[in-house]
Length: 231
Figure 1 (cartoon, rainbow, N blue to C red):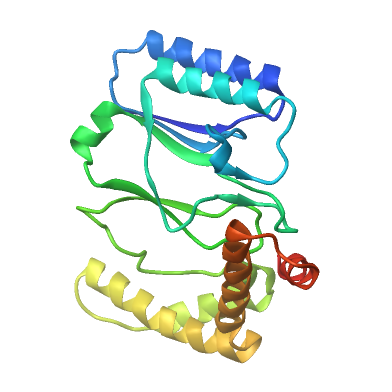
Figure 2 (figure 1 turned 45 degrees about the horizontal axis):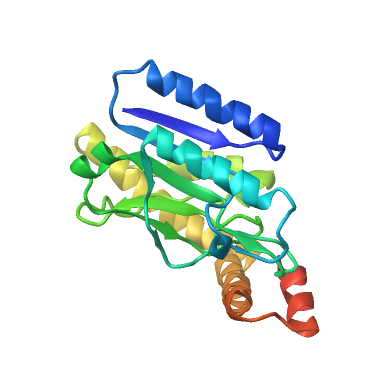
């Protein structure tokens, strides 16, 4: 299997150069399962963009679709939303992030689909590639990025980790210590930062509601201002 992580440049010439390099690599490869994932900075159809269309839009769409046809790759279907990128003012939305795979991919993972999650403070929505037939579930442990900005965090983790005593086999001890540390971190987070998750969820909910409205109709001035403040 070949997995290519893509962040396509904005300029048309540079983008076409990237397509050619990928095509040449595939032509010289015997591997039949390919996955291209990332930001392509281009849509395939007009309905994948809401807002202003650039003068090069139609030409770039044809070039992008030709690349997909020659590469013999297919879009994995989206679940949840129509667009993956939103300008902070909510006036422009696009599906420029996607996952493209060869047909053999679906022979192995027949239930593949892309779940579009709610965006937070990025203008891109996170994408999760899932096989609906086999879902590996959530990660067992979570660490919030802003904890690392607090000078007390490392000392707190070290102190609590060393103070947790468990007995048994190595893997059991590790699992139980992580469980106990997780409880300690939840309490510490509430004491130091309050209900940060609740606040973030509320902001995400408000942003999602406004963006979903923006997919259907133009937002009014008050709604646009609220979206920019939260985004």
